[in-house]
Length: 390
Length: 122
Image 1 (spheres, helix red, strand yellow):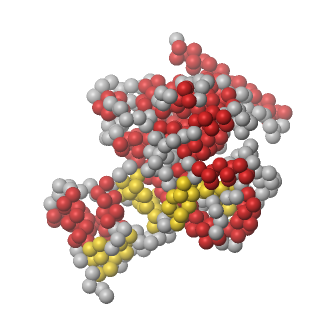
Image 2 (tube, rainbow over the protein chains, first blue to last red):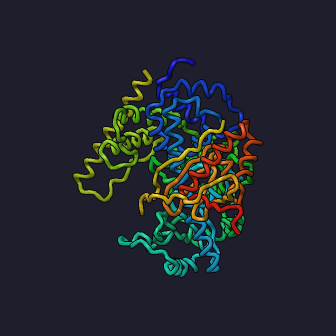
């Protein structure tokens, strides 16, 4: 066994290389590198990136579970089991919803995770992602009545106290006693008219079976487009691996994508952040190592995610939970959890040239506080850059 | 040797919490017919099986051999047929295999994940 590698650069690069869904992997070399890596912070990083199931799948495929440090492999397996169980619950809710919609005679199209999990045979790794709710598109003229009829079938609507859903592309979420919400969509985004959204998806979708019940799922072009439009740009979270996964699994599959249509839509107002979206797509293509990406969608700048991941891992290591019996959650509201995310966001913003966050919904003092915190986080990132360069 | 079944005792649902499962009161022997219970969902997790009991909100992980047994349980099976299939597929002695298969099935039954009936029952 070689020397242990403690550098965040090696660990972050190793993570990216392991996740990359290409065929020509030197498994022996990868095993050696995993055996030598110091896994501090890697679990938190995988959790933050939302890539636990993806990484676990790759670990099993590449026989890395017994090569990597035992504690990390154990954590990965346990967490993957937990997320897979949660996905089963979402699937059960999806199946129940499809059955009800078919009984009501409502044409529908499953979206996002609910659809992807039915398409794993076509898009490898499309199902290796945690899902939390069931999104379904219905024709706009049927949406309200279906939403009301579902309430007669055991669902209850979440109160829309702020009137958020008055002009939103989906109705207030529905719950039925299980811990998985259902969202009835009239469109795929606020920037696409409902009729156009339905026409696009219905004309290119395909039939899939959901425990014996027929349903419909989007075709490759719409799945890819949905992945692009649902990356929460310009927020740094859009550059987490889970969002790239949605795009690159479609891209990397052999399915036909209408690239002309994608290129056309990239120039329209459907995307409020067009230049950023291209950078985001470039990062996804680079992560998947897709050689024809620039030819298909030029110009497609390809930012290097590796440096961003190194910074993120450094943050998890520096402000980690070593020695704590109860680690602070990655997404918790504890000041340490929030501080770590603030630092990570600052690095992502600086590296990917993302705009500063809007300082809405706060008092002048609150805005000043956030501004100072963001500035301090940015300074930390620049100091880290200088230190690593030196 | 058969790797033993892996059980993961973690609740996944926030509502309802974890409920203790009823222990199957019927002894499982070689002649018992077993089949997956209805109130559960399962999926493949890179060769392993994850089973979620919809009744108790608990989930269970089965290793590769356990997953193979679980896959057979989609339709009613006699325990000795499961044992024979595993003996054929894996390098394991029949006695040892029988003990392990019975152990796995008893655990699954104890957690309400399979239904067991005597093969002689009408």
